[in-house]
Image 1 (cartoon, rainbow, N blue to C red):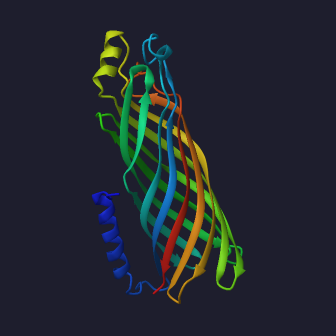
Image 2 (image 1 turned 45 degrees about the vertical axis):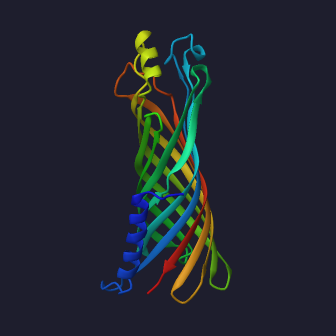
Image 3 (image 1 turned 120 degrees about the horizontal axis):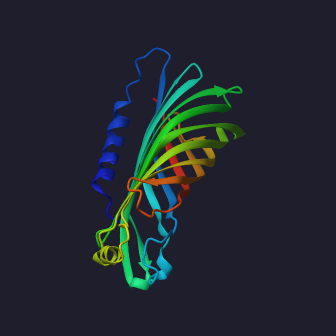
Length: 280
């Protein structure tokens, strides 16, 4: 698999960042722990059916459910500043390109989509319960985009705040198991360009609005993770975690009130996250 240019740049940035932090942070009482991450995430974006978007003679007038269902390989960088029981965490990640296909049998139509995923997070937290627990709040952004080999394009962007907490249990010398739960309130924007001449001609000939979507929505959702962390050396630790996220976007409103959009968008993530932490 060939990784996109921005993923290669992210890897270069990771190397530069880890080199830069080899010099201790100068601010008194502040420590900094950088990390590198590798994740394998099953990602599914679903757009529900659109009744009435097509003429009744084709599939009963229903434009079918659209899915982008792939397993992303994701590289990430991040770092955490600590002081007096408080912390500030920053992270960014970028996936490689993956492919999935959309098929619509009534029109003998198949298109292969290739897309990727980017995410950024900023989190502020406070250690509690003898430093075994944490309460936190933060802000996240995410962008999934895919382009078809026949010109169609889909871009879904989300942003919003989250709150949560975690608790760790020591399980052996220098190792812990951590349960993490977070609740998010997000805004989602979907842009979908339908450029296939067949679809354009059918909607125009039947006096229907275009199939393009430029819609906003909002969501609430939960994420969970269960992880194990331990030391490798005096200056390096690792963690491995299984994470689940599920966000359902409702209240879909298109910029064009005549467009028949989906009632709901949904994102699901399930995957394994590996991280290396560096202490200097």
